[in-house]
Image (cartoon, rainbow, N blue to C red; front, side):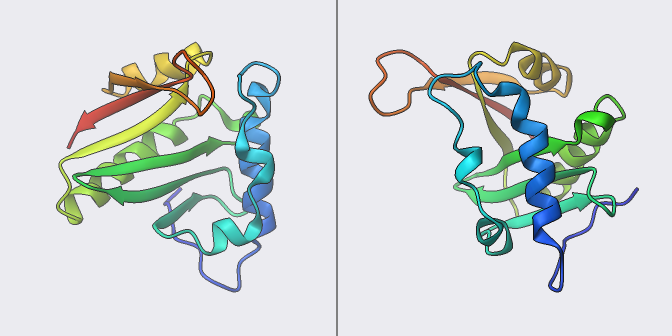
Length: 150
């Protein structure tokens, strides 16, 4: 399936539902809790970067945002019933194409430290862990930053 950018009229509720399902497995596993439950349809519809979707109804999506020399990959989501079918890799390849088109030198994404299964996927897709970050109020790393040159 070919990724596309949704434009109104679009059922943004379906996309929000996909993201929430894809991220539901980390509920109770990460500290602090995810902000995913505060994400709204309005956040998606007015995302300042690019929103890309695979499938109708959506099976996978990613939010891309230029940040300095990097293209930030956010909310990379694959419907749990379709994980392992190559959609994450397809969206990462799309992000690489978009980064080149925008003249950016690398891809960047973040993952919570507890989500080691995601880290393995990112390593397999050519990313390297480049730093750690901490949420406000925490004195230890809560997130890992992964980057990959384009």
